[in-house]
Length: 273
Image (cartoon, rainbow, N blue to C red; front, top):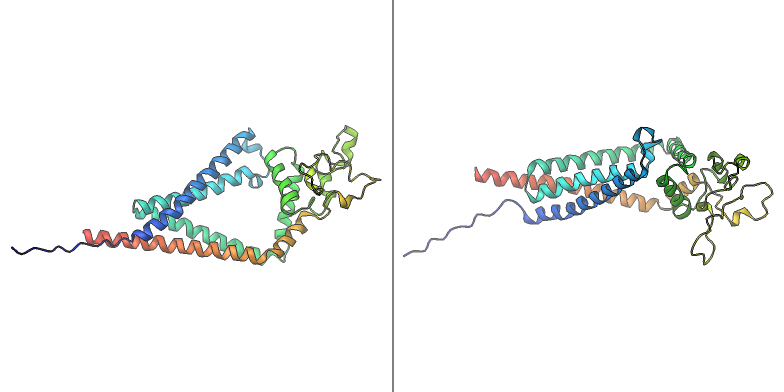
């Protein structure tokens, strides 16, 4: 009796492509969820009303919520769309990446055009001024500017330590009301001493007072954060450009992969019908 041989029908959907998209995006999904949870927790800990919050776009908790939401949505649509072979979710994933890519390219182009016109510098100045004025009002903003001054840029104020006069606690006129921080700067402006494990939180007291005996340049940073930021960008321009190109390439690759997987799914469905 002759043996019949049946040809196995091959799938049009690439398993490698499917699980590459799923694997990368499930990481973004979980990361976005964690960032979103941290942002919401930080926001609820403030115990303040959104209508009373000054400079909302500069608030670290609000930024974490926005970044976490965007990352979560992109990761969710990409991972679930790939795993379930859902063309609608994959289409949404490609659209999200495309919109994000257009926004990034637009912002990058705008920054390049406006860099010589002082607009970016003005915005950075206004942002730092808001941080200085509300330094004691919001712990998140306080921690952020402390990190900028102490760890990242190693600077003090906008153009220098004198900018801390904008804060009610550090203004020299606050001596009259008994502020111990009057005519001083935050501890994050102080230079770390050799072998100093824990920084003295009072190191910035009285450093802007007339007749201060010590050499201020040995105690605090005298470079403003705007100038320090410009210097940092110039020193790391190649790294910044490389990271930007990599991110753009990765997003374009993600869009292409999603569209290829969608095409494979449609090809498989056409075989069934």
